[in-house]
Image (cartoon, rainbow, N blue to C red; front, top):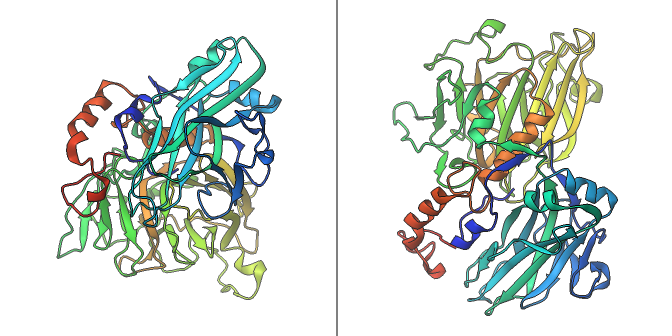
Length: 511
């Protein structure tokens, strides 16, 4: 998910949301991988593969898979639409939200004015008929000479429409687009999803706390770094009040991520956020179950937005250690995610040229590391003593979905966590000193849980995160109500001239 800034007040009205809802995971109904699937053009009533206004693109707006679809049509029109098949209709009825990623290319100095609008999202089915589910320009890009390539996620609550359906002979989703005023005609789309189930979803923080994290760094506060320690405090919101800090090279970013977050510039040295399982910092290491964040089974959750030039072997998080292979932890491996699998008890050192040995220390997941200027949720779970005492089960979730799992360890190379750890570092490898293999990008909402976080709760957290970063919900309470209008009214006049953004320090974005 892309971090979403407020553009105009009418975006607050897009959702007509009173509460968001709970998914087990998001269901992709079209990611435009060179095949139209259920995508048609509403006006021409033909597949987008047969309409000359559509083409596939591999460079702009790719948020799922390797391609997006480009619409080249100026002016107000009902254009990209989805005519759902039987499987799609079943997913529609089992969910409450439709979302799609919408992108525009960089201006490059060519386009200095105008707008690219999604004017309306309509749906059509027996019972409610053709209905505008989100109107009043639910998504809008303004243009200026230095405007960068941008991506926003449009989220629409269709639960009322769904509840009014009397038969599922047909279900259609219709977008009305409107580039004009000097803006380019091209709009890029990708990653059309349905999610939501039917339960009521709370604010992100509340959903995390409902699962009793043993450590929860929200990274909401902008704190000063001490010149003596090189640390700035970061609150643990789990209720344990554990010690947490950011190091000198990290940067506070307001209104990015889920609320606020921190940016790690990828500079080895002090590029990290750290925590320990005591109220005060302690140089003493106690690697026993009695002093672990969580003994035995454990789960880790992190939201991140990795830079395109993320280091080839950047570490997302890892316990403080002296061994390069000591679990638990998550890292990048030249574009794919890899997970630490454990510190073996066998004293024979691993042979880096023997894949049977080295594989016991790393799990190469075959899951691509997202580096697409968007926010992603990642969850890693470890289940010790799985099957036999020497085996351990590991799961990797990305954006609410179980992407891969494995079982590691045997009698020769027993899989172990740790020894159980009492310090953790986000943003690089570290031994309470110098940071290396530094992560570059944004991080937010890091949590550790005792036990295995279930698939449905991971889906709930992901959907709550979508809610917190969605258009309209300015207070992060998963509702669009008068409180959000009050926040907008208080900041509306900060700046209304895009040409001043980035040059006038008093100018905040309101578009």
